[in-house]
Length: 474
Image 1 (cartoon, rainbow, N blue to C red):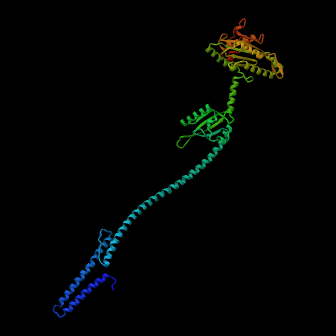
Image 2 (cartoon, one colour; image 1 turned 90 degrees about the horizontal axis):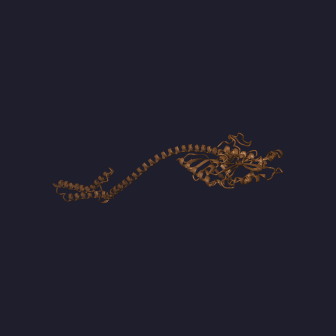
Image 3 (tube, one colour; image 1 turned 120 degrees about the vertical axis):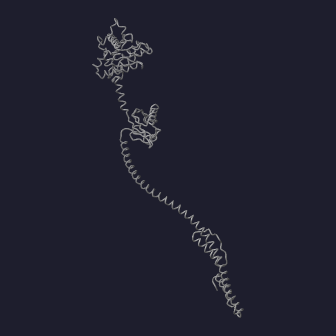
């Protein structure tokens, strides 16, 4: 048995031709003269039959070979389907299917190749990015190390800064743009009497009154607008105990990386003691230290103002010069401490009987003056009589009762008795000298008979009169 149907067909064709040739030779064996011709004819027909048979077999094979050659050259344009029986048809169908499978596979391979190409390109891009990221990472690591070193240096600097702030006597503060406290040192909350927890988030404007809060708000606005620090300025703050303190305060803007103000910082220095000292100096410059009354300097300044007011109002003004009678006797018998207490008691009685608009002064020793601001009555006579009654009453000095003190008052009227300070003062002093002749009374300069001529430049005046140089003139 042949394993191939194609070989069986070829063998069958050859067998048929040989059988036919044998039969022809058998039936015409007696014809000697035609035997050779006949044999040749049979052989020719046999060859022709075999060739025709082989052609039907070899032609599909040539087609298959041609298609296979094109496929080997990557040419898939030949789409013929080779049919036939047995292995030829199977081979044609297989080749046709194989061609289409290869075409599809190539298409798939092309798609996959394109995808792979794209992936490769992306991988190359990613590799480049990874390299850049790696380089950037290294740069960032180096930068991070630098920043870490800077932060550590900054932290140490800030620690030193904070330590310095905590150890300074002045208060230090930082606020946001709304004025709410976000940082402060111990000195500040000790200065204001609050605890640290109470002051966190507290508004600066709540630490003072309305007027000073408006002043502080205006300063903050100016600092934001100008971008420059505000120099030390005076401000009044209120402690938790509601006691007022006076401070000097500075304001500096806290700026962000863009240079925009994001808050304020500054120093607060308690100047209450210094302010009190200056106020005391100013007070002593115009007040008598023993009695608290206006002193000589204040007397002449108040008198100058009073006379200017008289010129504006067209009203008379009166000046009292007063001297205590027998004051020396108190010093000699009871001592200077008793004399000082007597002067203090005299001052208190004068302040009691005079109006707040009047100016009561002590020139020195036992000499006092009063400037009457006669806006309304009483008349100067009434005021003088009240003074005499008040100062003539007995005094209690060191367990001793003193009832011999009297007061002599000289009164000068502006502008009738004098149109300048020098003349007016000397007139009042002359009137007082006249009153002391009897004691415990008042005398108007205009009532002296015969009226004396007003002294000029202090010459010929009483021992109590003051020179123009001492008064400063008017």
